[in-house]
Image (tube, rainbow, N blue to C red):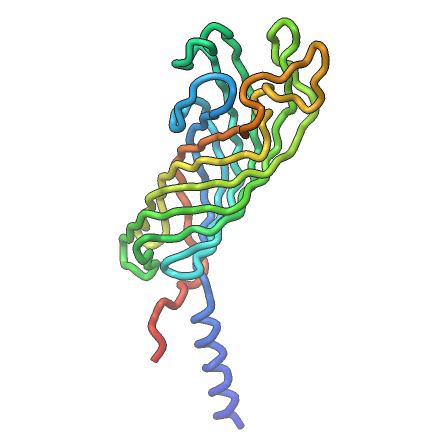
Length: 230
């Protein structure tokens, strides 16, 4: 009986080890830029400092589930555009985005957390994001007016590089573009236009915003088993 119990406990211990994961918890700092109906149309042009927190759940050496919270101020000035019509209009916009994102990260190389001191890989990431922002509009004096907080979804597409240092720290650098399901991050397409509140720009397209940043995370939990079955 004792031998059978010992055998069962051993099997359970092996299964638990094989299914255990390594977790990562870290902080992110970087800068944002926005692409819409006001300001520059450059896709990677970090201008406003942002920060956030990141959690990774490493399911294998090739993929991870990940959750991010990021605070991202965005701004745009027509004076910074290379389009003459925008330069002549000379509007400027600001907003603050709070983003919560859930996604899947795929490693191009095996990111083996059993390595003694170093591992490295490029990766791609996508998922779904929810964001809050201020609904705004421009009045007849070309002044941006804030209204209520609004919510929208966004689709992120991220490219990055990451490295494991001393088996405890993971450092990653990435650029992530988000396609937002709203056209009013900049106040160009208000929800309730009126005589004194008008829409302008391309009202048939949605806004984009980009976050370029660096993340440092600490790994904890049992090492996942990447060994081939016998």
